[in-house]
Image (cartoon, rainbow, N blue to C red; front, side):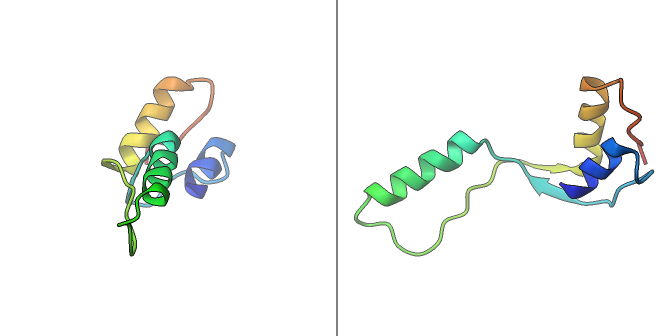
Length: 73
């Protein structure tokens, strides 16, 4: 996520070829509540949404914020 901030700031002219899961914070909060309230909950749980390449995220941000010079490389 730090790379996106640097791209917005114009500090870097590119970003690494990585991907990561994006999850709504309300979904993570609900998962915590459900795990806390279940007497059968044990171990670890993964809360993750679909995995998106950083290139797709940057492309979307460029469309949403055309006033910023966000690199597409």
